[in-house]
Amino acid sequence: MIRSLARHVIDRAAALVGPAAKRTLGKSDLVRRLVRWARATHDTPPASVTIDTDLVTENPSAVLIPIELIGNVPSYRYKLEELKRRHASMGAAFGLKDPLDSINDKYRAYTFADRYGIDHPKLIGAFGSVDHVEWAELPKRFVLKTRWGSSNHGVKALVREGPATFYDLLRSRTWTVEEIVDHHHRMEAQGTVSKTMFAEELILKPGTNHIADDWKFYCFDGVVGLCMQRDVRATGDQSQWRFKFWDSDWNDMGPIKFADRLDPDLAPPEDPAALLELAERLSSIIRRPFVRIDLFESERGPVLGEFTPRPGPPEVFVPQVDEMLGRLWEEAEQRLFAREIADGVWNHILIE
Image (tube, rainbow, N blue to C red; front, side, top):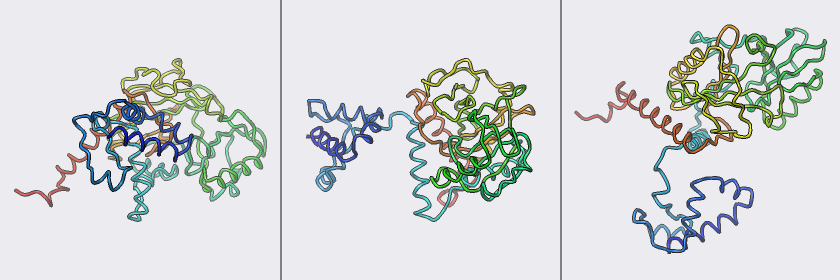
């Protein structure tokens, strides 16, 4: 009875969502396990399952998932998707914005860093739009960056070749000013970048003329779970970017994500302890269960790149790492809640 009803709901859902969404959902381990359970030939329900017959009668789609399939282990991916859902609905429900969004703005993130004496690339100029960029006043090397955007869409690492031409170290190509302006307007129209932008110091790998690697730290209230190293290989083609994953003791974690783009030969940072210390410090200052903190290593030491409160897809790690990060997230929530109790935030409900 239960499996039959589950099979009916699964078949109905598969027909409604279409093949693309079906393939996406099919990649979920939880969905695959649920489908296998529903397709099994016997109908003896697990002892741990309680069926609310009134609920099923009123709403046949509200089939309860067997309890042994959910909630047994923490999951970073679930916590992240939960966070994104809350963020999306909070504005509509309460008219509020997450305070962390104020430093998700790359320009404001530097103001935040200044408040705490943390180094960042030097600002050169801010512009209301690409049409207001004062090209003649910019130095030989700089980064042109939108105040928000993802996956380097709004970022160009430029080296001047002529009065109105620049070589882009991120894409291994030359742009004219007119091409840069046109490219930005098209991205802006697509909604992938902000209109406002700024120019900043170009950070290179120490002792080289190559753009610095990104060091992306997954941070949980002062605790670093792992660091993702990203080498963009002077190309805007993301399939050519190379990655390496490090634990907090700077051991290579192997193929935990982006297995097709890993490069085990990527070198560690010049001063790993300084990068790790800065990531931990920033995470502790922010006091949130999770935030990704992106840093660069410059010749003068580690500098802030940006804050990423809700990393974009694909955030799919191997199950062991997904569980590990999920556990760190839950433990961070516990610590933050414990500090609230110690600070008296919940004294209004305490009875002596």
